[in-house]
Length: 317
Ligand SMILES: Cc1ncc(C[n+]2csc(CCOP(=O)(O)OP(=O)(O)O)c2C)c(N)n1
Ligand code: SF4
Ligand SMILES: [Mg+2]
Image 1 (cartoon, rainbow, N blue to C red):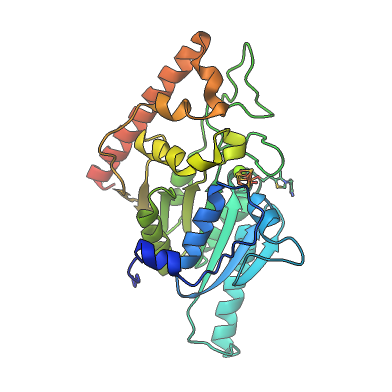
Image 2 (cartoon, rainbow, N blue to C red):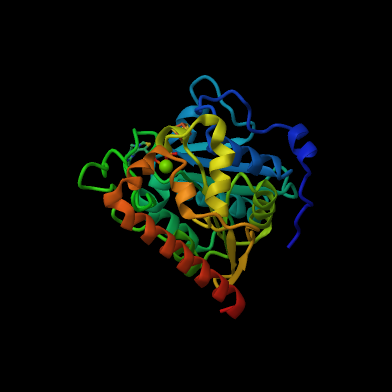
């Protein structure tokens, strides 16, 4: 697997910018950090598909664009379809000898929000993975339908208050467990799957490079802190992301070839899940006495998941 070396911070900050600042994402939006890093960590030609969501509506407001690369906008459910279709056409033209520059490396990438990835575009993503296209799908996972005002998705975590599962005197908000897309994608035949977070930018760059260098479908679940819907100060995006990874609410790990699980980040000091939940307005009601059990269940669930991941890593099954 040919992986170019990870750029250092200085190289990143001076890299040829392919995701331009001319966009309307909220200040502090993690979507832009993830996208920019993907584009800066590769020197290959990129063909990027983005479906409807905060990323697309904020980066391509006619007649402007933030994308200094080939870019396809497509309907809410179809980022994977567009990227896999472009990849299939590229392969066919290469075979027929009709490409102008057949030796130039080209990589195909799709971006979708959690609403489109976990819910509305799930079938199309799953089909593209099952067909074995050579592309990387990156879910910008802010755990809510942010662009349309904060409805819950199947990525929304238990206890979060959203417009369609609001917290109140009796209800503590979301009742369902966040869907486990990592396991689903690994089981669906993805060659490589990983979770990343922008606070661990080096790991994120390594994962992106690994996925671009892997032949076959890759799925990356990127936690994308949303100051607007999670209700925190825009200056705290990286701090909130630190709390997510260091409480192990969002563990960073990868699954290679559907079975080999590697943990990519082990916090030196694991912090209580309460510290993560208490940092955001969407969970603030959980600190009322009547919802104490939800906080305790959260910690138990996160501990059990971490235990499971470590056992999976050791067992190599
Ligand atoms: C088939 C279809 N259903 C619904 C919509 C309306 N819609 C546009 S963006 C969006 C929310 C996007 O949420 P998500 O995918 O999580 O991305 P985010 O905005 O949170 O980054 C919705 C429901 C649409 N455009 N097409
Ligand atoms: S609402 Fe959230 S995801 Fe959308 S642009 Fe603002 S911070 Fe980013
Ligand atoms: Mg979302």
